[in-house]
Amino acid sequence: MTQHTRVDLGQDDIDPVMPLTSGPTLLESAAASPLVGDVKVQCDACPVLCHISPGRTGACDRWGNVDGVLTRVDPVLVAQQSGAGGEMFVTGVGAGTTYPDYKPAPFIVASEHKGVDMVTAVTEGIFSYCSFKLKIDTDRYLGPEQGNVRHKGEIVGHVTTAEYGSQMLSIGGVHRLTGGSRKEGRATCQLMADLGNKRAVDLSIDGGAQLVVQAGRAPVVDGVTESRMRVGCGSATIGIFAKQWLGLIDEVVVVDDHITGVLSEHPAGSFLGMRFSGIEMKGRRSTAGRYFKVANPGTGWGGTDIIDPLNIIEGFDANLSWAGMRLLMVSTTGEHSAYFVLDEALCPQPATMPPAVRTVVERIAENCEPALCTVLFVGGAGGSLRAGVTESPVRLTRSIKEALVNVTCGGAPAYIWPGGGITVMVDVSRMPDNSFGTVPTPAIVAPIEFTMRLRDYADLGGHMEHIIPLSEAVKRASVRYIALDAANAWPLGASPLLG
Ligand code: SF4
Image (cartoon, rainbow, N blue to C red; front, side):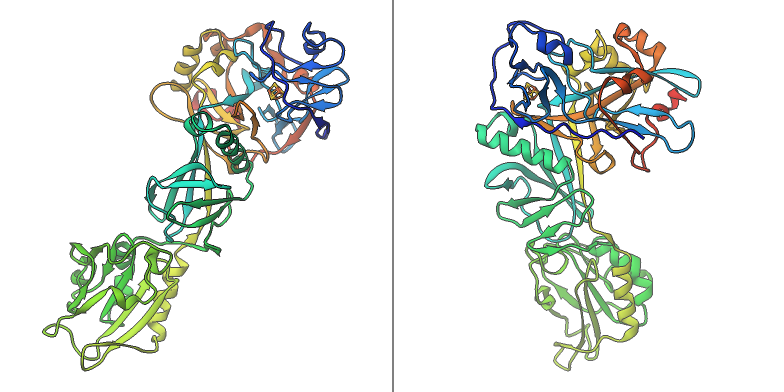
């Protein structure tokens, strides 16, 4: 297996100039460009148009002047199927970019899959319209919806909605990249690349928590590493475990910042014939045994600010409650729990939790999933990037919607949003490491591959004269062979129409 490593060069200062010519795209052309003379080469892979001195790289550290030739300094990652005769797939990682977009993609590769002639148009797209969506599995309160998310003091995104056991952040986006100060744009861009490249990043949320986020790892919230993702909301937890509590206990309160559950009042308890305990809860009663806003959000019990769970109980109805009543209070992850018995004055007194009750609490914890950070890249490839694939961009969009084209990012499956354009969404943890780069415009560089049958490529007006065989593609640049993430479908055969 051939291994080529990155060409290491020093970085030139940014030396942008406006284009005087629309020169050819790749390597050999740059040295011959009338702009550059015999010393520097001009990179035309993005609007910055760096002039690069011999032995140096341009402003993005991705292109260099190697012996007078403009060279993409990272190897192209080529995925190889395991086993004898395994197919190969050229990914966009390290492939290089063409700019302006009317030029064909850097690699338009012919290959064969199950006897069908295929084509893959491969590029590193430059995305100004893109963001990262972060799903943080935690009950701990991260911050108010619409709250600013900061990195090194700069606003880089905002808090969106909480989902079931997770809180969502949006990082980046075109307004952050282009609409603020230069410093804000650059800070955002670098942070986005770090997130995409699966590095740990520090975030702070106005009016909320300090976070450490890394794709595929547990989030760290205010210095505490999160371990469990809740089994359900307070009401669902009541429903799931009601039968197991029956006979062991008289009342269970599952404390949750959103929906706190009260067993004896909840349909799960009443259907099992439980006697209502007479407990009176704080907050707003939504439906039987389901309470909203029992406390403020926080990093205590069940995503509330509660340290002492008894603080969410208003009292006990003297006509319904009884001395000796057994009360369990537990959080949605089982991380917090406390057991009480009511005394003659109907005051809950701490008591030793019986082992059978403890077993159900432990079962709540067992049923939690590991808390993780998920990092999704969302990018708009519906613009000019399509011109590298076809002379009629809308035909590519239509072909993707008709499932004639399989879109991948670094070989990872991309979800295409419905509606117009080509808005891709991909889980970065399924992409090769260090798939993302930046250019100082600022924008994100991300790999993207469009795979389809040769005849469909011809039909959509593809750059047929630029197709090269796979065998030539792997000789044309420094390449590194990799295995794709085991969860990824093989890109050449992923679409039903591709066989
Ligand atoms: S920033 Fe990078 S891609 Fe853009 S012109 Fe400079 S070297 Fe080329």
